[in-house]
Amino acid sequence: MDQNNWTQHTLMDALGIEMKEVGKGKVIAEMPVDGRTHQPFGFLHGGASVALAETVASVGSAALVDLEHNHCFGLEINANHIKAKRDGVVTAIAEVIHSGKSTMVWNIRIVDEEEDLICISRCTVAVVPKKK
Image (tube, rainbow, N blue to C red; front, top):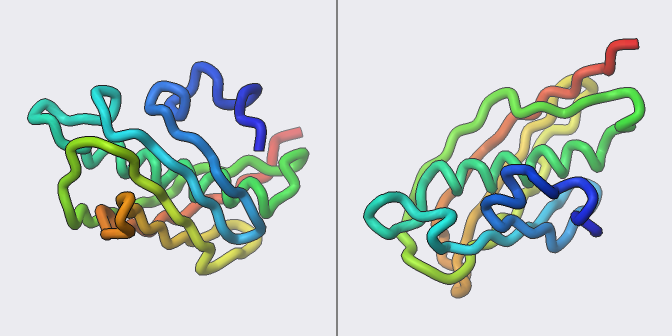
């Protein structure tokens, strides 16, 4: 997927999030663990993990709707931060649990290079008709 047109000057761009796979009901993206995503003590910031999780859920939802007629917005998200990380890359794997007309629910696993769980998240995305 070519992100160059739609991620420029966004949070995705600022955090270095790169989409690796966008399919019907599954999204994979990577994010570096570096100065852009650290908290003050040199570890991956929980907020960066949550931003990554909501990004893959939102992009995945957008892939399942007609974007000419709908917007997708994060409605609710929760996250459990399981393991700390200082550097390298984390990968988010999002899978749709529920794909309805007005909401979608996504399960997101964020793992490190060894597939160790860093964060587990669930995100509800609202599908909102565009105003005419």
